[in-house]
Length: 306
Ligand code: CP
Image 1 (spheres, rainbow, N blue to C red):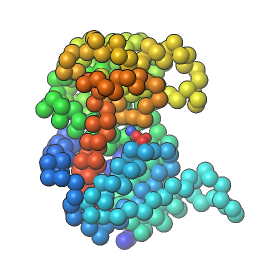
Image 2: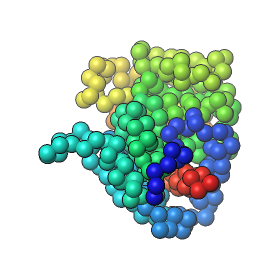
Image 3: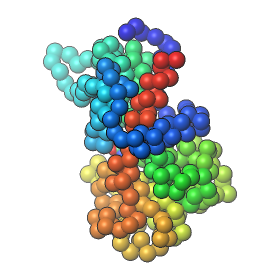
Image 4: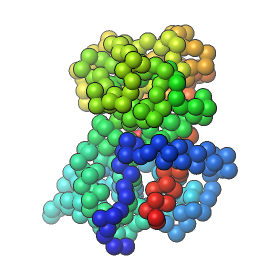
């Protein structure tokens, strides 16, 4: 494998054309109907480089590669981890690992680190989540789940609740709404944690409403982005967290067809007894991620062969 400045990386869902996303959604649907074993990636090795914690994305990609006949190598060393006699740079780690792999899937807490890794890599990179901004395969699997449930993506009444400023899942989903405008976009966030203007750049202002609490009435989709971990950000009081939490009583306001989605992991943003409700679809959403991630791998693999 040789270094190439022509490598195409999958950094943000905003970088893709509507037709490219639709192709992936169609492919995910075909994979879902056929079943989870394929040979499209037989003989290929994917490096899973996770420098920030993950369960679903890391294990989901691992399973997706293997379901397509490929294999994985796992890199979890953090650049910040002290290694005697001297720590290696992230760029050097990625350059070395990418030399053994056909593709890299990478997560990092800082967006500039993803950019640096993409410059250093000699294999195409899929962003598995970085900073507060980008989680493109989460957006893809969210769209896949919504389309499965409603048969369409546009014209829905969608509510996003939680810390919409730092949730890369919520922000990535917002980035797709220029392609499939919602009938209503209800943004429910604590003061100072609203979605920024940039995230709403391509959404019709007339469809957007903003609330400092959770209001579930009339929503087709209630997307629970969650609040920051109270251990890392104790500034939010319990009272304030409760204003953005889904309880059994919250469900009474949802229409009978309304669904609750959540990227997970859950801390306390959805009460556990909500799981038994027909509205709760977040574990099904998590299951559906397999097809979306298989489709993302094949999309990325396909366009790098062009
Ligand atoms: N939704 C999501 O990214 O989950 P993980 O952090 O477990 O990968």
